[in-house]
Amino acid sequence: MNIIWHMIRTLSLETKDLVGEKVKLQGWVDSKRDHGKVTFIDLRDYKGKIQVVGYKKLSDLRIESVIEVVGTVKQRSKQYTNPSLPTGEVEVEVDSYKLLNDCQELPITLDGDGLDINEVPRLQYRYLDLRRSRLQKNLRMRSVVIQAFRENLFEKDFCEIETPLLTKSTKEGARDFLVPSRFQPGKFYALPQSPQQYKQLLMTAGFEKYFQVAKCVRDEDLRADRGFEFTQLDLEMSFVTQTEVMKIVEEIVVRAVKTAGGSLVEGKFPVFSYQDAIKKYGQDKFDLRTKEQKQKGLLAFAWVVDFPFFKQVDRKDAAETRDSKSNWTFTHNPFSTPQPKFIKDHLAGRNIAKIKTAQYDLVCNGYEIGGGSIRAHEPDLLKATFKIMGYSDEEIQDNIGHMLQAFELGTPPHGGIALGLDRLVMLLAGENSLKETIAFPMSSTGRTAVMNAPNKVDIKQLAELGLKTIDQSENSVHDQILNKLHQNEISFQYLVHEPVISSEQAAKVRGTKLSSSAKALVLQADDEFILLVVAGDRTLNLDKIQIETKAARVAMASKKSVLNKINLEVGAIPPLGSVIGLKTYLDKSLEAEEKIVFSAARKDRSIIMDTVDFIRLENPVIKDFS
Ligand code: ASP
Image (cartoon, rainbow, N blue to C red; front, side):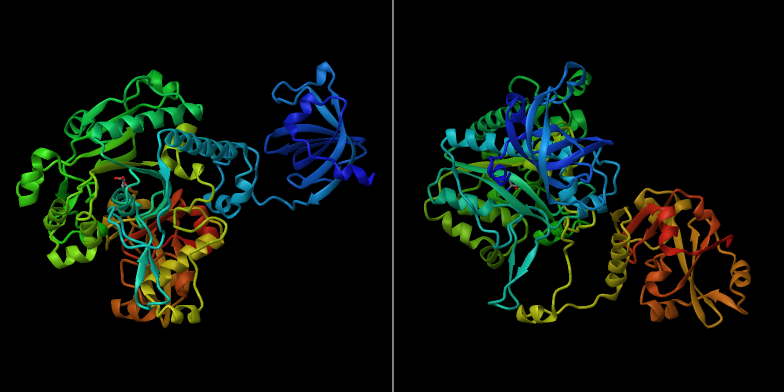
C-alpha cells in the first residue's frame, strides 16, 4: 500500500486518456454529493475537474479541502457522462485517499462569480476568491497577454531591462509615494510613477530598444476600480519616428489580443487629432464600436495625436499645483518634444496654448489604454518645458539636471510608449473593474488585500528613520471610522471631494439626495453631550429630544464646546457618536432611506453606506426628532 503514495501525480485533465489505469490525483474538493453508500467528489486542480467516486469512502471530506486520491480511471456508462466537463466521460474509483489540508467553514462563498459579495471580505480572503473560475481565467489571460508581448518584442530585438523602485520623483501628474531613508534620516526616495527617465537614459546608454513590464505607483485619488499601483508595458526606442512607434505598438497589441483569444475590429488603427476627437466625441477617449461590434465583444483601438503640450493648472489638483510653478503645466508628459513647427515658440515660451506635442494616446472601447511620445532629447528643449512651467534655472538643475547632462553626452533621438496592462486585460476579459484582473488589488479605501496595510509601525522603527508622526486629530477620527467599517466588514463607498460646510453643499458635490444626508448635531442635554442625527432636509425639534432624554434643558452645543469636546469642526462631524464618545439619536426619517450619506470627520471626505448597516453598527435611539 505504501508504494502507491510514491506514484507520480496525474492531472485531472489527463485522466480522460487513461481508462483502466491506476492514478494518483491531488487537488481540492470542488463539490461533493453524498448518497449514503456512495460519495461523489469533483476534484479540482489547475487543469480542470474530474469526478471521483468513493464506495463507503470520501464522505468525511469537506468542500475546498486539499486531498490526495489513488484509484482507477473508469469509463462512465453513456447515461452518466457529463458533456459539460472535458473529463465527463470518465471517473476515478477510489482505492484510498488522504487529507492533505482540511478546509474549515468558508468565510466567503466560492460558487458563482463573486460579484455580489462585498469587496471587504473578498479582498481579505483573496486567496479563496481567486479560486473561482472567473478569476483563474482572468489571471491566466493576463499571463498569456504578457507572454505574447514578450515573445513579440524579443522577436523585434527588444531588450528587457529593469529599472529601480527606489528613485527620485518622475513627474507623471500624480503625487509621489515617499520612502524614508534610514542612512540619511530626513531624506526620501520616491517610488516611480513610471520608469520614464530611466528608460530614456537607457537610450543614452545605447540599448536602442528597451521594454519592461513595469510597476508604477501613483498617489492619486482612489476610484472604485483603481488602486495606487498599476502595471504597464513600458517601451522605448532610439532613432524612431512617431509613425514607426505607432506601427510597432499596433503589431504587438493586435498579436497579444489575438493570442489571448480576443477579437478586434480588423484593419489599421484609425488616427484622430485631439481636436477632431473632442469635436466628434466630446472627449479624447471614445468608443468606436458599432452596436453589433459591442455585442460581439470586439475591441476597437484608435490613436489620438496632436495634443496641446500645455494646459492651465487646475488648482484643485494637488499634484498639478505642485508640479508647476507658473500657471502652465504639461497635459501628458514633460519629457515629450513639441512638434517641429512649434519648436521656436517652445524655446521662446511664446504662444504656449498653441504648442502641440509629439504625444500619441491609444484608446480602446472608451478607455485610454496607453500613451507615449517622441521625447525632447536636446537639453534646451527640455529646459524650455520646465521654464514654461515656471521653474528657475536652479530648480531645473535640481529636478532634471541629470537628464540635461545626459542630453549633452550623446543621447540619440528617441520615443516610446506605455500600455496599461490592467486595463487591456480588463477589456479582454469583459470585466468592469481593474481589480478583477489583478491578483491582490487594493480596496477602494486604499487597503492592501489580505495583509491589511497601511498600518502603524513601532516608534523605534520611526526613530531610526528620523521620523515622528503628528497626531492629526481631525484625521484620526476619520481613520477610526474607516477602521470601524473595515472591522465590521461593512461595504461602503468613499468619496473624495472639495471641502464642504453645509449639508446642501455636500449633497451637491456628492451628487446624492439631501434626504439621505445624515446631518450630525452635537447637543448639550443638561451636562451631557449627545449626538443627534437628522436628514439634511429636516429641522431638528428640540422639544422631542428633551422628552426623550428627560433633560431639564437641551440646546445646541456651542462651536467652541464642540471643538473642545471632540476636537472636530462643525461641518466635519460624523453621525457615528460611538467613534467620538457620544450617544447617538437618529431621526426616523433617515431610517426610511436605503442609503445614508455623511461626512467622514473631514469636510472633504464622505461615506455612503446602507442604512441598515449604519443602524446595526451604531445602534442609535431611533425616534421622531424632527
Ligand atoms: N511615462 C508615460 C506614462 O507612464 C508613458 C510614456 O510616455 O512612455 O504614462
